[in-house]
Length: 451
Image (tube, rainbow, N blue to C red; front, side, top):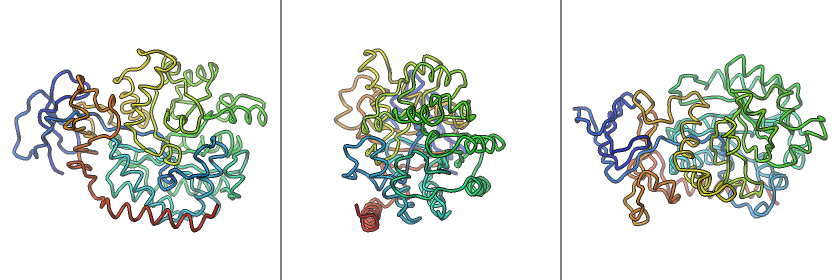
């Protein structure tokens, strides 16, 4: 494995002065204001760059990368949008189309500073081919990015509007667990420097699996020390259905099903009230905050400042590209920094705070030795170039990427010490061919799925 010396970075997150960083055997082996060059060092000029830990995206839907801007869903709320967009198209997504979608999505992640992506992959039904999931793992391996595959799915149609309207036949619990077990044995690696993790992630806690199935999933995950993930309280419909069908609040239903704890995190939690926040904090359950998607679908603003004050670690996710078309983690950090100031004032959030949400908190959730620029940690590093007119007037170089937001100028990026972006180019990706493949995939989907 190559050894790198990142020399004279203009600013490094966590350090007051410019630093040199040595990458050796996949980890940060040394960091200091000045490091002497070793014989095996390959020099990386960072004199016009800011260095951040790689972002950890804790909630995505890579399959949606080929479902951006679908006209039918542009002005719909979550329930109707689910039926019009993801659940209208995904039964027609083949393994080849899934590979193209995952490759595009992961390419976009790397271009926005991500080194670890958690994909909530829920394209499972009674006759799903295992090659569909395999395509996601393969795309991540080809691009060199860490993948946490959150294995979704449903065991009943339930009150999920998208499944009901699309006529999708769900898996049985036994079939779902058998398929989970096959993925666990083939892909999961619990090493703190792991490139592959598996998570048990039924698609929607309230709508797509009965309580007894959720408890079975919880037991199965705990026996294997796997994390758990799902959607919860993205909109008020979750609360309405929980009260109507179970006679309790959505958060109490989660507790009833053994779906709270330090091994659980939920996407969105926009509609979490004081009781929900208290229970989440008591059980050390975490959140994937997805501000862009929540704005796009009109779902609301998650009360993450109250959550953080209660002791809940906040992480960030881009959500799927069908409801967050930019698929940029840098945008999520920029919007998270801005959004909560609209109702809590200009000191409500700061750059260091949201950067921790997007890096260290996500790494801690997954048990990965990433998310910090510290000796002995994995060399998941992103070098943002400030060598462009839009950055030249910024007085705070360290904060410039988040303050200015997109378009990002990523000069170099490393995952486990392996270079995955070099001089602005994602390695292993022919951009012209990717564009061609994506356009062909969209045309194929449209031909298969007439409105």
